[in-house]
Image 1: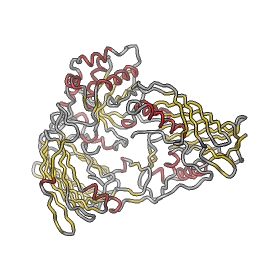
Image 2: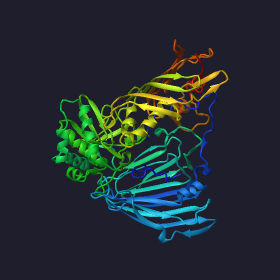
Image 3: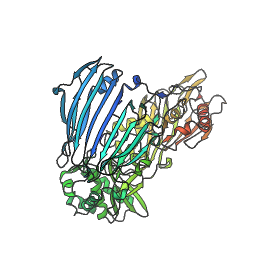
Length: 640
């Protein structure tokens, strides 16, 4: 259980195809199940007994916040996690004052001594950027059942959006018994809320010439979930609210957006001119973009956060970035925008929320600063949009990275910022294929040879891993995936381009030897059929389930395995085909003159299966068919 408040600075996968020959037995069994439920205090480790905040917003958008909260520790995990509390702050744009910190155990109050409070740098404090700090408070004598109380004041005297105040909070995965937030502002406040469980009580009034909004809990708010596998939280079902002194994106940070655009028009330093000169104008737009971002990855170091300069979201100048050869996302988005413009492309910086789980699209109805945590570049050319993330170590202009796909993004056009949507992911754009010939000896020894193909987004991880791990390590894990076994006696991986940062479809020759097939039955050797992790996610227990089912990014897996020198025992029909709106599975098993040919195709069509769909009859039928056809099965083999 962590501090639930979700603000830009505080809300902060490696995707890989799972092994496709996993734990399999001959007969189909039901998967292990657990009954889903809302978490209890013991599950959570800690409960926020109350969280109270008072905001005093001034006419220039600066503000002072007084905050106090109390956490009850319910188990050892909560004790370990909450005995230290951290308050992040920007030392150049705000002042933080600790008012009270204490531990209450069996009515005994222990004040936190001053020696237990320290200010530390938060990550790298690099020249040209504001000083990101954190106050670390170590609470003494914390036991199970103790209460941790904290009260502080933060005065924010420089804000990212001059003359504007915005705030957003989400209660996703939280457990808070009493919530009370009060906002008093010199400027009118507009409110957006998403309260599907009717847990909030909201009121607005005038206090003299000022505006007052109060957001309180109508009852204890428990959105933590226990004993659910493959959890996916649907943002549309999250309780959340936001406040803003502006109500339209056309009013959002006009001076700052104009300044960002002006910075992109400054003369290019020599380093950037060299990148422009290295681009062949005869290339397609996607090829030009990939060439630029690949060279940027070589030239500039990215540190992964959203740093402020002079309290704002302004990037540094092109000269500063080129001189230091490092930058945050805003800096690198500016560099890419400037280079693309020099190549004659229509480019602008854009802000987006980067992460595996997008925010609720409905929240973008009200402009707030907390809807973004990352800067990218938007290019319009050839009648289409390109969404480019130059912070990524590999280049993929022909598609879109999963952590910025299918969500709103604010394109920073100086005349009028535009809120647009990035493309959704499709399974046809991410494909993994294997075509193998397996010779199976009477002893059970397996000698395999064939090809592996990785297409589209599926090739991103292989391309990226070549820059993070050794060839030996990459080959080992590739062959673990291809073979579905960790008992590799030997293996070979064919040559392919390992040092290009541009993501391309990969075709690789592979070969491996297993000392043993790994399964024996009373009728002969056994060969386990494909059991992709997607099967497990579909077959989770859905009784009283509270969240959607996570499928990860859409993809297609195709596997063709020809087993030679053997024949199939038995006449049980193992071929099957299932199609649904969320996933599809198909398998054929047939005898051939040389042995047995097994062909599988598995497709995840969506990132998640919504809770409403999980409760449908269509999904119940899907589970039944998958359980009978694909969950656990094998072919029994006999040598020819």
